[in-house]
Structures are given as structure tokens and as C-alpha cells.
Image (cartoon, rainbow over the protein chains, first blue to last red):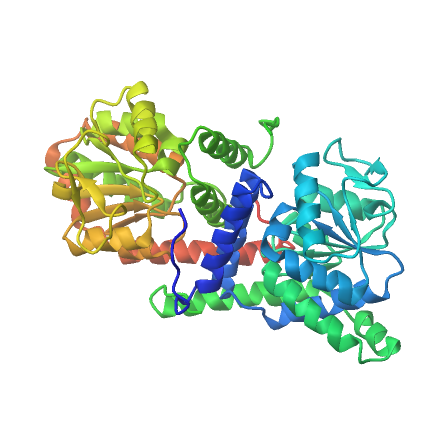
Length: 259
Length: 259
């Protein structure tokens, strides 16, 4: 099923990511529903022109700042996020000092172990998953609500990616501050998060690694300053305006979406 | 992995279709790339409000007319289309007299046989696939260009659904008249087809079955009349305007897309 995609293809990155997802699916890291979710994201990324817009980078800067400044941050990783960006997630964990928890909507201990191994093989310093003490998020039935006590359950700041709306809302209800990577600005996750990163997960994570490196050269106060004036409603509106603009331009050009 | 979806859920139909796709995938009818493609369609259907708009019904009426009036029509069926609408495809074939060809982008004889069996089990009178004389569509490499000589290759009118852009373009180049079911009005298939049905495949096919039944009560000339003034550019523009309107309404309501 593998096919050659020429580097010159205008949608090279997107097609490579798609193949990467299918491979991860064959390895048992991604579930079928994860492939469908990836397709939904692809549609929004396609409309947005498959690049990190200014509204995404601003949310990424504030997220990187919170990962560095929070007293108990965590990066929640599911099958899709691991498949798309394992290497960059590990780099982000190292640069910010935030540990990783493998946490799955379609939970299976075998799949958690596979994702844990993938992250450890990429050099992750701390990954919670198979061996942690488990507890339940109130309002979510088992196995969907299972989390690690020393991870998500006691975290003050959580980065999630391509996350289910019910779970994001349940985490908000117990007072967590949440940053969410989600290409659909209309999803419940995008609407519920404190910081919504409307960007493709691999690009978003790469950007945050670079931002975290830049922050190391700054005073702590300067990084704190960044988080003070953040307004997520403004970010969502900007994303929406960009979608409308892109669609209008496409129609003016005879329905051609350019990259 | 199966879960209960209450009938009262505002997105019940969409969630049921998603589960149907995953089941068909587990049965070997749908490929992983087909699940991703379904997700892309879901995103556009979500924006459009998961209903058959007037621009879709108009295209469905003209397609049903062509299936009835053409001298050699054919319904091209791939894994996703079969998974979503096998029963209704068979009804459409019976009501219009158009035979079916199982034709796959990710071709495997085993998968063709499975889809063929599914359609025959639903009562399809004529299905081309495993046993036909094969030939190649010019401009498409094997195995992607393989079609049945007495089917797609010599047809004058082809209905495709959730089809690849390269294949739609190759069929146009050899002079075929094409109707395409595709939820993304910006896709190459949507832009290339003579008739673009911007609707979910199951809803579109159900509608066409009812339309074909209605046409049986009309004179042939009245049905012909319908096809004369059809303008696909107008249909695409209407779909586009509806997308813009829905997005604007959603933002006005605080980013909530209602169904």
C-alpha cells in the first residue's frame, strides 16, 4: 500500500503524515477511529492552507510558557499524537521539563505499552502510562476516565492534542488549565480549552520546541508576561476569519485552494 | 470498540455511519486510507449541517435522470461507498436499470470479491468486478487504472462516489460524463465532474432511489427536460455560499454549529 510521494508535491507534508498514520495504525498505535479523526483534521488543515498561522503561533507561545512555568504540567499523548509527532513530543518534554502521560480514549494496556515504548525509544525522560497508580476523572466512565494519579489527575496544566470533547470538558470541570491542539475551531475541545492551538499537531509541536528553546534565553518574568494578556476568544475569532478569507479567495480563483 | 449511541443524539446518523465504516474496515471492505477519507467528508458534512441541501437534491435529480436515460450508464462502487450504502446502491441499480462495477483505488481481488458478494447478497441484478474482461484507463498506471471493458470502459455515464481526483480526471479525458458524490466542493473530483453531488453518500443514494421511483410516473421527455438546463458551476457556487453562511451563523452563535 506504500506509494511514492514526490517532494515537489504541493501537499507533500500532508500526504506523508497520512501515510505515517496508516503505518502507525498497522503497528497497533492508532485505532480505526483515530484514522477518521485524522481525516477530519486534514479537511480543516486543507482549508487553512496547511501552515501555522499567526493565531496558532501565539497560542503555541503561551502554551510553551505554561509548560515551563506551571508547577505541575503534563503532556497528554494519545495514539494519533504519538504517531504524528513522537520525536518532537519528546523534545518538547525535555525542553520544558513537562513529563508525558500516555492517555487513550480507546484504552488498551497493550496500546499504552507500545506508545510508551515509542516515546522512551525517542529518549523521553519520564513517561507515565502502564505502571502508574490509576484513578478516575469524575464524570467519565471507566475505561475512558482512567488517568495516572501523579500525572493528569494532579497536574495544574495539561497539553492535549486531537482530544475528545467529553474528556476535555471533564478535565475543565475539575479545574485543570488546558491547552489543546485541534484543527477544528468549532469542536468542543477547541471551544472548551483555555488555549486553543488551531494547527497541525506535528507543526505545532515543532514550533513549541523552538519557542521553548528561545524562552531559555529570557528572564522568567519576561516569559510570565507573555501569559498575562492572552485571550482565547480572540484566537478563535482570528482562526475563523482566516477560514472565511481562504474560502472566499478560493471561490474567487475558481474554487482552487492554494498552498 | 462498539459503543451505544442514543437515538436522541443530535449527530446520531453521522456517528452511526462512522461505526459502520469501522465495522466494514474490520471486515476488509474498507482500507485505512478510506477511513481517513471518511473523516475529511465528515468535516464538510458537519459544516453543512448533515442534511441534503437544495443544491444537492438538484444534482441528485439530474443524476437519476441520466442513469435512466443514458444508453450505457454504470454505478462505480468502492469500499467506502459500499460500506455506507450497499442496500441503497442496489435499489438505485434496480430502479434505474444501471449496472454496478466494483472499482477500487487500492485494488485487491479479495476486496473486490467481498464487495461484490455484499452487493449480490443485497439483491443486485448485475455486478461487474472479479469476472469481467479487464482493460486500462489511459493515463492511469496499473493497478489503479484497471476497469471492466463492458463496464466503466465503454460506459457513457458514470456515477462515482468518494472518488480520487486523478481517476475522475482520467475518466473525463476519455470523454465520460460523470456524476460524483463528494462532500468537499473544493476537491478535484468535485471540480472535474459534470454533476457534483455535495451530499453524504447514503443520503444522496436514498434520495436518488426516491427520485428514480418518481421519474417512473413521468414521460421520458419530462425527465429529459430536467437534464437540459443543468449548470454545475451554479451548484458549486450554491454549496460554497451555504458553507460560508453556516460558518458565519456559527460564529454569531458563539462558534456553535447547529443541526
